[in-house]
Amino acid sequence: MSDSLPDPRVQSAAKTFACAQVDIDARKEFLARYLIEDVPCVLFFDGQGALVMRKENEYTNAPEKLVSTMEAAKKAAVDLESLETDLESRTLSSPNDPEVAIELGNHYYDTYRFEPALEAFRRAARFLPESAADRADDVMLRIIYLEIVLARYDDAVAEIDRFLANRPTSPRRDYVSFYRGYTAYQRHDLARAATEWKDFLAKYPTSPLRKDVGDYLESLGN
Picture: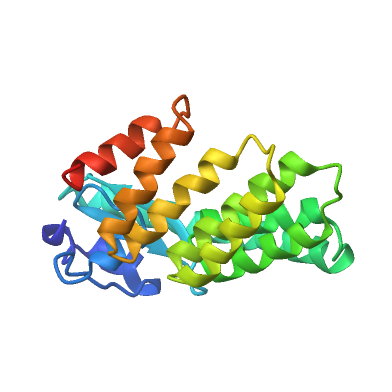
């Protein structure tokens, strides 16, 4: 891709971009945050830090291909801004509508802006009616995951404990219990993670997460 950069067409298209290269060996947390599994990977962000497009495991020295990708990223940023303006307008007009808050939270989540996503999901959780228990469970799973991603581990554990205490019949209990081990894993408390996941397998032998938990335990030497 670097061979394309001196091309006048690329230089012209790049005038509205700021480029940066990340040392993936030194910035493991960057890989984890943006779920990067293959390289090269090019991420396009707008001026607010929203991820608008990604190109993973694609390599080209064709200037026209790079220009086309950059133009597509600019269009994606414009479309994203329009969608976000609409969502924020609806949030202002219906601040207590949990479905609007969920939609806004999903939007922030999908563009990797986890702090505002967490705030939106928390607002949704406050206003969801008791009759929407399954919907509330899904929102709580997002909240717990985001707290882990943002390294707010104590908050995540508190939410997990609260959920398991208050929702004894929830069909999502296995997913929430999985996050006990995952929180410990992210904290690098590997012995605790192994203990939690072994307990998980004993309690939820038919869970869809069983294989994932087994893979984690195998990676930990258990």
